[in-house]
Length: 219
Ligand code: SF4
Image (cartoon, rainbow, N blue to C red; front, side, top):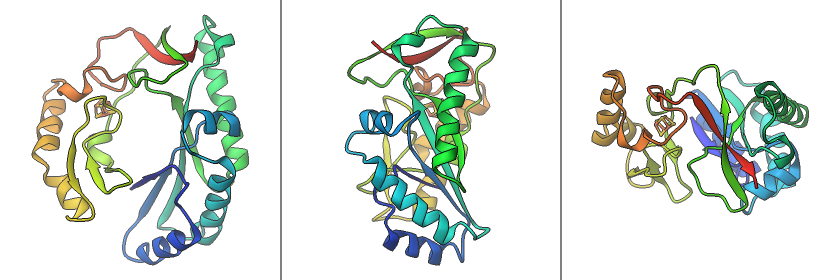
């Protein structure tokens, strides 16, 4: 599983990934925020929507026919200020609009759209709460390897207190992720219905007792 914002998914990288996909199944998770190019460029610093679109369009066309490569766009939305204090169904409708826009612009990719995590400080936004029916179950540390641009492997990027557990440029990524004592401890805690420290503030924390769903909104 590879996370990227799509900016460095050049044609050269797509060719290398195609070679790699002969031996392994590749899940490419691309972070593109909706519901417009302006929103993506506003919230993803130094991103350029056209570059992302060109890169992805090429990669999907070049690799998309292969069974062992899957493309998923994962957008994180910040709620516009005019939707504050609206009902949950109106807010969900906004998410669905954001998803539809990405589906239309990136044919061939799966799309999942969520709200931006509330515990990450972003200038010009504040956190608001919305009544929710139920909280989602998190499987991130069981399924995803998070890698930074400099090769650093993180325990989970969604936490404000994430830790670096290795580096793909020096070690075997899968080995580090599988055997990391920090991650093993967190996984064990989850299984025992305890909350790891790094998950305490996270909305995806499955044992959270919150009855409110916290989301980011433009001030
Ligand atoms: S609960 Fe949040 S911080 Fe913890 S593993 Fe899941 S996504 Fe990461």
